[in-house]
Image (cartoon, rainbow, N blue to C red; front, side, top):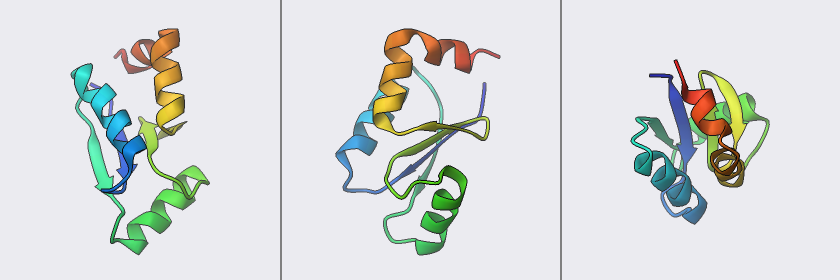
Length: 84
């Protein structure tokens, strides 16, 4: 399985939606909660170039946020990206 990483904040509804989609598809992911961790949030910003959450990576490639993840799912691209 490919490595999926999701940067989140615990109060973020978009983060919840993104995680729900991944869970519904049975996808295992690593969650980094940046709510109270400024160093981890700084890492997220450096990796993605964005300050909002969620920020999602597949195999170290930046995918985007919740809307991007759902768009990939609707187009069928997400499944192809996750194939080994």
